[in-house]
Length: 404
Length: 123
Image (cartoon, rainbow over all chains, first blue to last red; front, side):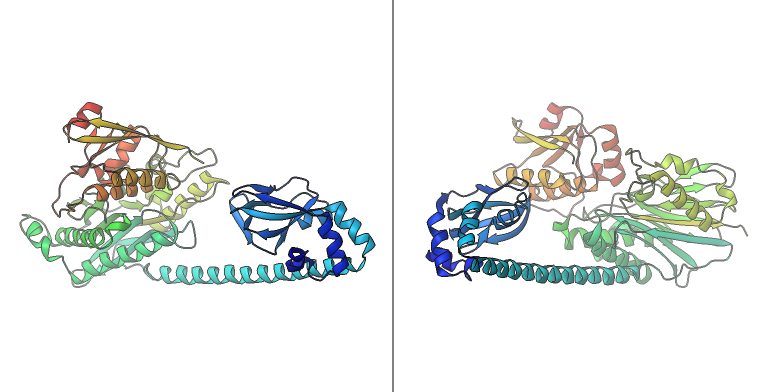
């Protein structure tokens, strides 16, 4: 009787009714980790917790934790539908079990009890409405934060691509989620007329990758623009005979960026594959380092394809990793395409990959502008993917030498 | 949902070596299983480890993050020199996985063996 009094759900009931109910209750003692009611099953009993705690859950998702004085199982008793959730004890528990028939028998002789139950149910409903409102507000707040993150991240991509006489440059960027791990960059190296071109893919997806994307992009841009170099690497690079200034910039930038992330963020094990090139627009010479990235493709004007294979490992893991620069001479009419694995590893519903081969076999590339090429590839990837969702970020950079 | 499991074997070479036989795909979903199991073995005293990848069909970037983290746990000196891991070796990756290992440059830091005894004796 005392326990029923202490139970919020039954508190409004007249004393005689509680007495009648108390006489019809059964006391259960249950060990921990036992399911008292099971979702989807029919049930004719409700429970008041006298001691211990239970978890109301839908599979792994916990909906509520209840303790002394609280009630569960009342919904199926009142509307005779199946149990809406499973209730499992999380400790030793003592429960009062009340049968539907006993409840309705007692209510039949004490009609005032209906009003009390109605009141209790409505109280609970008001609570639920309040919870839903709170959670909806939380979700909206998170969505707003994510949108702010997305906009700030967009600011880490260049507003506009640099221009150079006799060259066309285009880029595209499609994030699989609100924020992305892919990045590209293109900027002029002051005083030299050279263009720096960067395409990177930070491992993983979502917010973690996005945070590291801002770090990789900023270090690469700052180190190559302002020439800062980890003092420990001077000795490594000074002796490289015959290396051009562009190659020094490429190697120093990646060695410094790699060392910084591998030591400062060692415990994160985050890395990026990066293609980093410096173009001399006047001659068509492209010096580059391919740090563990998908090999960019040069579509030669004569129909041949050339791939720019890796010259070093991914950036950010092994502090002392060496990087080597290579170069290629682009001829008038040549098109360079760099892409992230969101393109070649795009999957259709059957799980097949778009594959690099499809890029190498693209027809009439030479007739297209870089922008047309990227739109063409995006269209092909979308058509290939069909109904399957975009699972990874897609970024591409393309440039074409129009000839002097 | 990919299935992934790990069988642990202890072998005795010049040093005691823990061999983790990995079965299944290593992706973002299964990577914590590998990382946690390896960390558990290292906490229990493992100093040298071979990852037997004979039965791994696919390994994504998450798997490489796990390998890096495991090597960090094993390599307590964290020396600054550019050298191959003295504590962690890879055994029998399939050709697809090995191609990715080489593209990402992990082959510069980790020995890849195709013979179990050779892998064990390499420590």
